[in-house]
Image (cartoon, rainbow, N blue to C red; front, side, top):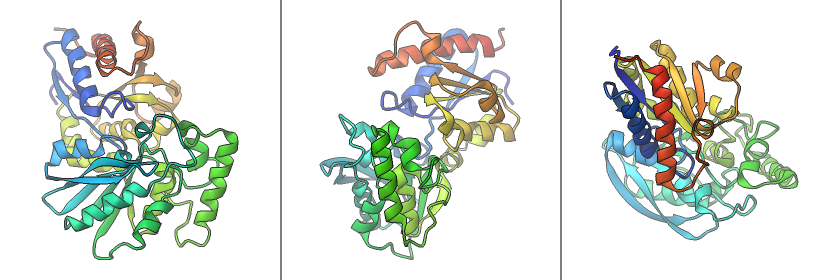
Length: 342
């Protein structure tokens, strides 16, 4: 362990700051308060937005440009990353993410574009395909993907890297938990639940399967195609060597746009805390907003959680530079508390 070394390992802050931009803002703030500290920036993803970008930085590989269907069928530009070992990485949010819609479309938004990514991965010669599942605008249970592909070749491994472990149906499922985030009112949530129930009826995959509700049920559709589910945060953590980098530091700082109950169910914040626990390092969270209490996050191995909204006097902004400045200012204040002075 290096006493004057801090790992900065955030997820993206919504659609405003990428994980890489967030890490840079945290580093800038830390440098202002504690210039003697070495900061190790480790941008992360749990399978949601930024999944391919983070893995490209960690693994390299050949980017394959794809024109895919967007959430409403419009053409969007996306990238499949083909790594040296023959694994292709795809990001569902790049083709059906909430950031692609000017206004929410909880009923119409489709996951069909993910099928275009999968087809491109196969055409590129991938022997294993990993789909980052999270941050979608759709709640179609992945049905559009299954119907577009028909079947998945048995000789190619398929992995659903999910950001949460939620089931497809019920009060903890795709419609009830995430539908309101995608613009669904109570009546729409009920309609989405009914549609998902009808889709799952007669399928071999249980709707209770871990991760089936991720990505508006895209996780379920991928399981129907024969995918194996892996926690996205753990997959990325392994790719970037997170455990060893944390072990070499004295403190870990992670964060995201909004820390809520879902954050403690498989997202980046929880994955970082779990990894840090294995090597006995404290974890601090800096989030745009903190919506869970101390008891909940302490049970997940987090020492403290700070809200950028509360630490800074300026209001939230969707301007990336303003958001980065706010995050840097908050990091500067937190660094004074958590970094030993010389």
